[in-house]
Amino acid sequence: MGFHGNASGLNVTTDVSSGNYGSGNAIPVINIDSSGRLNSINTASVTYSTLNANANVGSVGSYAFMQQASGNTQYDPGDTLAGSSLRYSDATGRMHNDTPSGNWRCMGYDSGAALTNSGTVGGSAAGSGSLQGGNIQGDTSANISGNPTADLALSGGNVQGNANVNVSGNIQGSKSFSLNAANPSSSFGASVNTGNTTKPADDTFSGSASVSLNNASVAGNVATDDLSITGTTGTIATDDLSVAGNVAVNVNLGSITVNTTVAYSSTLWLRYS
Image (cartoon, rainbow, N blue to C red; front, side, top):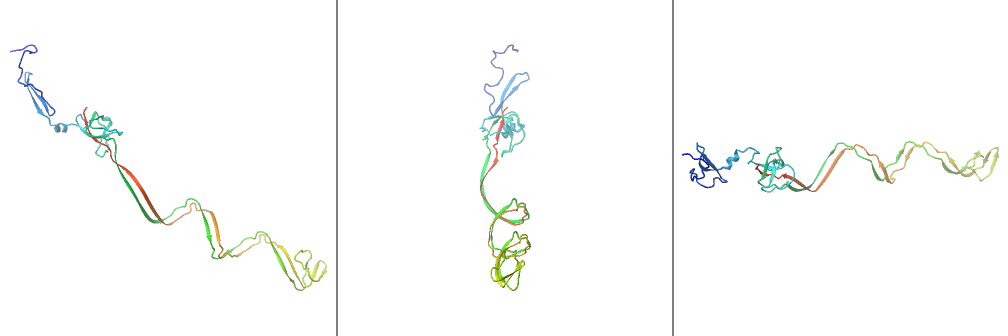
């Protein structure tokens, strides 16, 4: 028996019961017979673990642990973000270079801020060692005071300038001297003039004279024993002076606060398109 048209007048075309087929945990299974007619409709339960196990990395429906490629924006559960702004990562926030495609939904929480631990350190240390060599940088100046413990030897030199001397004494016997000399002279006793000289009797004399000592050579000892010395040495040339010996070092370390980044924010994302 054949039917023509849209069969709007027919009451029964199959044994399928009325109702909704399919749910979040089941999918409809439709059976068509060999003549192309609807034969039956049933449902089959869905096992999501099986579906996800067959998903490819980065495909729609797959999950990935990722973090923001840059920036520090907060993402709450359900927020979405393009894959180009995400990077695969581990739980400590170490980032992989691969960039996922598509669009992703945050299935966890991304604070956008790195996790930082703070700590305080301090202490002191002391040590000593041998200074094998080095150079002093720069000159220095110093003050000096003390007493020499011995005389100093004057090995050579010249006197600068002349010296004035006073003389006095007795003329013994018959002595003569030039009248041209102003000093020394005698003003006492009898005298006899004979030509250009005066022959005094035994008498006393006194006077002064200039003795030429300029550039005269000198040598001997200079009395410096227990001589007090004070003053400033001035600048002592110590620049680039080689040094060596032992050195002691004491180090006091104050309180130092150290902030250490221990993890970056990463969370679970689902690709939905």
